[in-house]
Image (cartoon, rainbow, N blue to C red; front, side, top):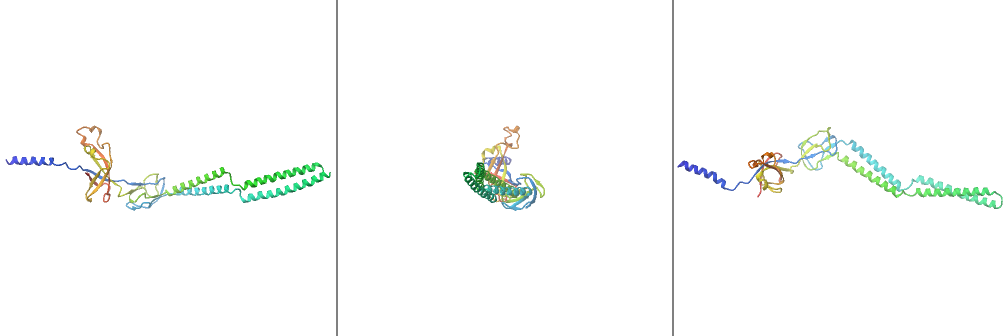
Length: 316
């Protein structure tokens, strides 16, 4: 009789828990950090690295100095190009140089004097011809001399007028465009020089250094990795049977050894295809082995460390 009661009690002990509510599903995972990889925008030799692993840095702080010989030379050339373009535009805008204008004006005064003299000589010879004192050939020669003097005066007056005018519109527009291009080249050269100083894109801690001063780093090759404590996420895997109960944006409760209570996370990514299970296992009996990778942003990253195990439970 005693054995019978013992068997009945044991049976109830097995059955009663199964009749109660199912426990909340939980998922085991780990903390992962999204590192910021600090790299130069162009290849070159590293002159100096201003930080070490473990240092705390602020946004905009100088981290890496790259060699700047070529960029400095390009900046000097671009600066000179702007100066040349400005001088060309100023020269076209103000007309001829003062010395050139004065030479033309002096030549005009001399030509006008010769013109006046030629007119006087022609008048005298014409009077003498009327009195029969000179041949008509002399008058013809004096008339030709006056015509030549008139033509020279007209030519010099035209030269003086042109020299005092600014350049044509087309020439001035071309000079202004050349100045704009030179200024753009100067801005590009200054940007290329400034980019040789690599600064922290955000505040955080230097996690790892991949290069030393004197080494050559390719464009985009990480020199440092920057860890931001507020840029952590939890990686966990969801069984196939519970995949449909989760969605992006769902809140989760997070717990870990030594962590404070009330920590949470929000699902940011949920795989559409299973991981770590080959297609041959897609059978009714093997569905329990299917898992889906999921990521959840930790709503309070204080106290978490990369690689730390965590347990996540969906919030109701």
